[in-house]
Image (cartoon, rainbow, N blue to C red; front, side, top):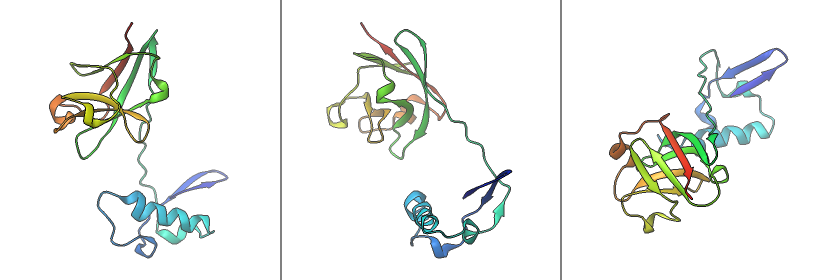
Length: 159
């Protein structure tokens, strides 16, 4: 938990299990830890109730896609889900208008699919979070493309 002070910020580790939803899933801390803590904060509980102050902070880079030319949008893989889908930092509203070609590594994908069922092989689609994803039907796009978080992704308008 981050606490804004007049001069900087403090951080508190969320270590007190009294505030967690049990059992805590190893993959769903948003539901099991952060949501109950946020609810407690909204009721006026002090952030210091959740655990000890800490100096162990990690700064995570926040990337945003950018246009490098007319119809040429460049972004990055920001997450790989448990199915091996590549979730990018490119929102559907960021995409150039009209048909696009998606490039990840050496792979080129023509167009954006509307759902997984209509795809064969590698496909690009807008996931439930509103971001461009690259998937592989019945497989892991991450393994297939040897892709990692931070790798480049581009969307280019096709005329």
